[in-house]
Length: 53
Image 1 (tube, rainbow, N blue to C red):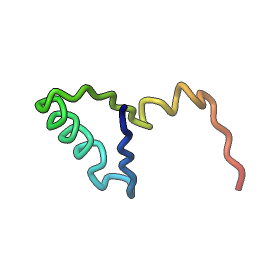
Image 2: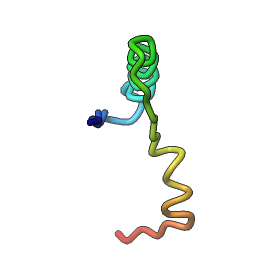
Image 3: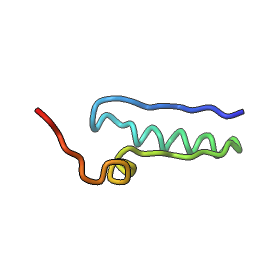
């Protein structure tokens, strides 16, 4: 069985830095990881986003 870890927070609060550190730590324990970064996924999921006021 697997598990998910969600890191949330304000912009520029260190989420990506923490995610990479956690990924490195888990890999050292032999635990495979997949890192999904919203900055990478956003253009794929919403290539032309529209915003309403």
